[in-house]
Length: 400
Image (cartoon, rainbow, N blue to C red; front, side, top):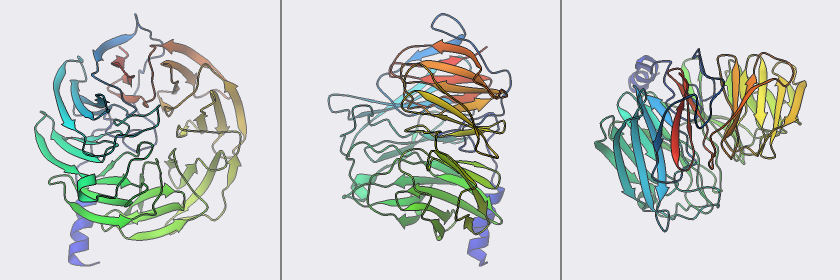
């Protein structure tokens, strides 16, 4: 290991981590949709169980994120959906602390279900990093001051937004890993969180892809795992060097879930693969073909795998064997990924109805079904004993 690479490794390995209570990016601190929080809510509605709610200025498919006692959320509106919004709220009270707006520089075409606020932001103790489907990327500090801004379409003019880009950036210590896989110039880049400059940039195949990267520690190397139509590729987070590719583990919309030395991928329903120091096992340990996901990513919790499908089915399988324990249809279809904590799994459908499951039960055991209404496609966040839910009009903090 050279002196420069050793310095980068030490930076990645020794930089302070966020508090466990934070939910700083898509599907939480570990990117697996699981929280260590206790005392999480079971029942709520429009007139009960909501600690606070705040009005939003536009639509959003993105999830709220929580860091340092602040909740950050993105929205978009305007005749061409070209007004981009970043808002910050006090996590305890719901008071709006600031609201910033940007003008889109890229194409605003999207699937009718989506919009330009489709990518979930990432946050740390310094502030928030907001990526929009237009290729606009901005960093604001916790008080709302613009730290840096980039038009990725300006930097790479062939980047195109055909039906709505939605992959979310993830934080790896001092770098923001930005997925930009599209019909134009495609890449995965690590951007310096302080100045917004590329630290490395890895070329990717051209084509539409909506998956969000995962991060794991493989010995002394921090890896960024990024799935696409060509398979699952591991990149060295320090250098951007490609370490291995598993062509059988393809992806396009949902992301996988890492649990120790195992990864559960939305392939053939949901499949379990062994993760070794040099890559992915050639064949899955099992395939649960009944666990269809559609848009949502699966969550692994309490020894089980939970998948919510676009057709309204909730499927639960044993995480070790792949045996399907139940498959039940619930109200509505799902776009949001399920999240879990405190012995519960939260399955939020597109109409704002959330089925809360007992994660310890081997049969379908709903603890409650709670309805806030509204078009709801963003995945909930869990932090500070609360569940944060956003729809196209409101942000809710659910819990005591």
